Length: 300
Image (cartoon, rainbow, N blue to C red):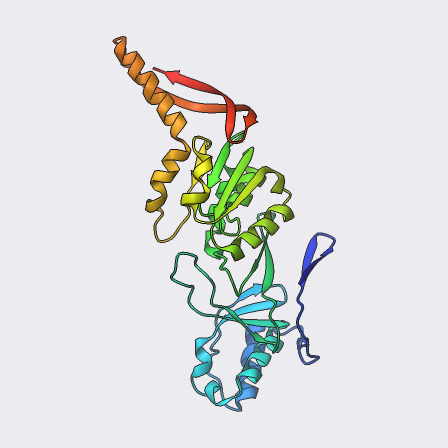
């Protein structure tokens, strides 16, 4: 597939066979009304309720639930004709059918391209808050519901910080952190190779790839060289990221140790100080994963 720039818009062109029958009908008719009319004509029966009440729109691809085609009257029709009808009604080249997201740790997609026949291109793109995301819907998921959190991550005050995203996915939070928060450097860990392919595309597409290193593999192994490097650790994993909390602490262990050591030294001198380290300035790197830093230590 390819993305063609047209002014400020991006048009995804899928590498799929396109039938001339996939031309939208009356441009003035609402998509839901057009879909109901077309399905009624296809079923040759009165359709009281349109089985598709919601769908996800990604350029020339529409992503729809698929269970309804197994019920009457649709189950009596060739499935190919049903999906072609859906695509034609909604003015889409590709119709993708989704099932439940894989319950495994990689959260893999169970989407298939149902129309047109022979199409294997599942790449789509969307834009949120001025940032561009691309992914293959047949291989990885995209959580549209995290849109507000993605916006918040881009508005954080993280000037000059280094962060580690232990569950980066396709860059849900890595991209906005690098693009909008002022963060200087990001390290993105992800063990799904399909997600990593999309992550690298999204970093480059948004012009932040030069400030992010991507680590493919289990973060318990890939993040071993990142100890004492992070100002901030992102732990976006469902249903829980608790298993990665010990690793997150190690990534920021030097800041914790510095505060603890100075607290102990003050106590030895009879001073009950409350010690915090609000900022660590990274001056330069003089060896792999070895940094020259300056710490601001607040004692009260």
